[in-house]
Each structure stands twice: as C-alpha cells, then as structure tokens.
Amino acid sequence: MNRNGQINGRFRQPKRDRVLDRGRLRKLLRQVKDGRLGIDSALEQMQVERIAELEHSTLDLERAVRRGFPEVVFGHGKNPDQIADIVQRMNKAGQSVLVTRIATEAVSTVIAVAPRAKHNPEARTLRAPVGRAPKGKPGIVVMTAGTSDQIVGEEAVETAEAMGNQVIRIRDVGVAGLHRLLTHKETLAKAKVIVVVAGMEGALPSVVAGLTDCPVIGVPTSTGYGYGGEGEAALLAMLNSCAAGLTVVNIDNGFGAGYAAALINRAR
Image (tube, rainbow, N blue to C red):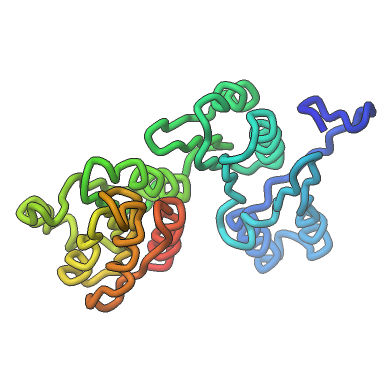
C-alpha cells in the first residue's frame, strides 16, 4: 500500500476514521448515563476500525483505548517510507504518533506526510501529534548521571511528555560529585516518580532511591570503559541495589522508563 491508498494497482477509497480514545469513550458513557444518548447510538459510535493492515505492518488502532496511549513506532530497522506510511495511517485514524530510534535520513520523509511532526535529534525521536496537546501533568523528574547519558535521558523525557506529562530535567549529577545532586533536594521532594539514567558503575539510582519516598526507575546505559562498559556493570549494580523499591529497565531503554514513569504518574 502506498501513501495514496493503492493496493496491488487498485485504488481503495479511504474510510472515515473516528477518533476513539478514553476521553471520547467516557463522554459517550456519560451521555448514556444521563439519558442524552441512546444505547444503540452509542454502540454505533463505538464501531471504529481496530486494526489497520498495511503492506508491511499491522497497526493496533485500539491501543489508545486499551492502554491510554497509541501504539509507538520503533524506528530502528524500518526504512523511511515504512515509517511514513505508519505515521500517516495512524494520524488518519486520529491518533498521535511517537517514533523512537528514528534515523536522521528518515525524518524529512515522515515530515512530508505529517507536517506537524517534531524531531528531537538528541533523543532520536519524532512526535506527530493530532489535535491539541493535553495540558501536561507535573510530577516526573528525569535525572542523568553524566552528559554521555543524556541521549537516553532525552528519550525518556520525550516519551513521558508525549504521554501528557510535564518533565523536569536534572543533568550531570553523578556520584563523582554528590553535592551537585543535593542542590536539587526541593525538586526531588516534590517528585511523584524519578527516572535516573546512569552508566559506568550505575550507582546513582541507588543513591536517589535512598533519599526519596517516591518510585525510582533506574536506566543503565552503555557508557563506560572495558569489561561491563556496554552497560552490563550498571545493569547488575542496579539490579543488586540495597535501596528498596528501585525498579530497573533494560540497558539504554529510555523509552521503557519514560512510559513506566507516565503510567505511575497517571495513577498518583
């Protein structure tokens, strides 16, 4: 399928998609409860396309209702046209799109079909929104131990912001100079969830978890020297932390940390 809707040489008329997210679903249910909308009419409005079949991908259009956020596109390994097809189709279904690990050479192709898309080259992400952005919910802090960890930290920030959160960044406060961390004690005290990104020996998440009373998510990065320098040392250190309640995601997985932080912040 190309971006003009052709499949095997035949033109398929695009169907009108209706946006069905949790906000719209709640509105429909309230209208039924208040007697302003009949059950049959509500059911008819809930009949939306749940899966979109592209030539190269099968899109889950129901994820926004099921999980509260649309399907996210992992850009690594996909060519520019594939990413552009996915973004355009999801936008057509009324869903904003977050693309992670997008290659620089793919950005212009995607923006050609989604002019509102914004690229963050440091985070290697691209956001293609639909409609007005929701007011961000405060509560998330993303902290990086060193400047080399900021690529992963920015991916966490972009993810959490795409999911409707305000994010405070704290940068370059690793354990080599703990006094830098302590200057942010008021910010840490107000946080609802903290993402801590660290490479080398991966000690910073344990320190933060021992100083705060909110959930802490550790993100080991592939920053370091020699054996363990691909993130294994930081990962094992975080997994073996004596600070109770520290949760750890995979190496360099800023997306996973940002997503988890957004879910935690939603519930608090």
